[in-house]
Length: 134
Image 1 (cartoon, rainbow, N blue to C red):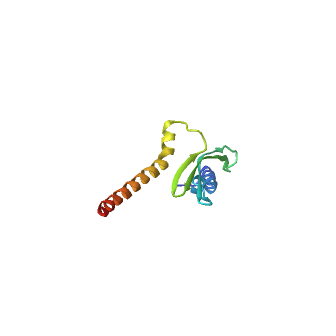
Image 2 (cartoon, rainbow, N blue to C red):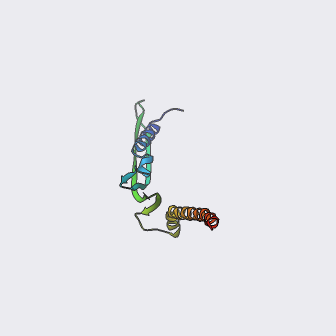
Image 3 (tube, rainbow, N blue to C red):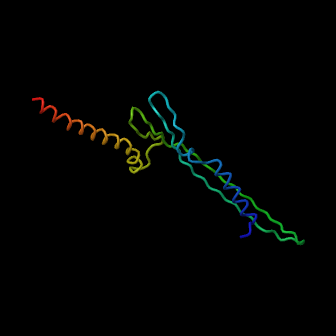
């Protein structure tokens, strides 16, 4: 397949955008303060376009006109907070729907279920030892 000027423009635009956005842009580097770890979470939206045309000329020279461009929006949306072995998500924006609120509560729910299971296991272990002591 012949490399056209439009393909070159698209490849260059896409490559520059790849350089600007990577995984650490969405899930940021952890920040530790005392016994608390904060991990920023961002929403990244981007788009690009390019185009071109071959221009007619009176000479046998091939004339080309074209261009490309793109845009990126990075919006911080939440922090994952890890404190004392518990994980929760703190959203920056208000919840837009019930589904958003439910998703944000999942880490907290997992922590509570884990605590319940641990306390239930410890109660089962304590019960036989109390009976044997009598």
